Image 1 (spheres, rainbow over the protein chains, first blue to last red):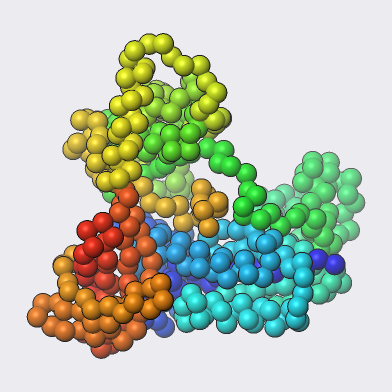
Image 2 (cartoon, chains in turn brown, orange):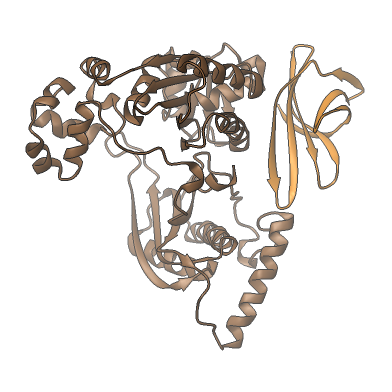
Length: 410
Length: 79
């Protein structure tokens, strides 16, 4: 039987902030997305803030209504990545089968057991406190597969340790939790199951496999197995994860705007950042995607927006990506005020082999772009930039706190 | 409070780590009681070490830049 540990950090971003600043400990803390406090949402809430009903994803306004004393702290992804790197380095000592599920969550499959499981888990908790920070706590779930280990980890928070030894115990617990408490069943699937008359795992186990396959296609089999506590997915070591499939950036503007010049500048800046990342990875892409969100955040239509994609010749040039993205934007935008814009490029392939252009302007462009990349890599993004961007609003590249492109660098 | 003021810092070298011991800011001498968290950030090729520290019940964040080898105080919470 396999032994899988699910390690999940509690209120991660907020706890790291409390670790850095002890004056925040024991107080309700909300981590925001930056210095635009009046329009940002909470990236995390501390355990103390959660007691007031504050949840991740709430607007600052909602959080302050529930907890007037909440302390808002500006998020710092560098800080969270530093802690993640530290705890992953601890976990690597126990097994090479370490899957990074997100910045604060991972699976560890033990292949060789030297001492009792609970002792290993307690040692991991102790080392995290000693080597990452004395305020940092995690919940550990231990079971025979990833699905049930994750369920075990979510049963007792904060600082929990739960073992679900076998399928019998798993089914006993499954019968006592909601359908969407399992990873893989979201609100939509839950609603579809409800419409079928399935309200819990006990009923789900009674549904024949053929019925689930007919309703959910191949996912029906997964649901069939889930209800029985079965999950055959392997733990994917982080160093074996697939390479990136797309490169993109988005930017929430600190005010609503319908000024085409301003939007153009932001989009150009984003596409230049995308192109620089493509060149750093020696990749070119051909499918450009552009999307945006309207300014109004009505409760009926929260975060509504629009987006579309188009294909161009394989490119790693910021201006070419911009042209594709701007064309999409112009087709979808009718002058409304927007609050966020983003672009990405997918359908990636390695830069070489490729046809070498014989046109001198292409060669010159390549030389100039490589020189600009060298300067910007040394002195920081946008040290050298297009003249049209000189008076543009500041757009920074921040490390993705969800480790989207950092798996291989740990 | 976010600031960015140059400071003089005394540090210990412990193994392969540096740990601030004392710093001088606005004619005051502040002793570091505890280093709570160390993290790094980058701007181009320049690496910055950020030390979140406590001293006398207050919170400070010190920054050491490897490019110019200078220390700055970038965050203060006192009182």
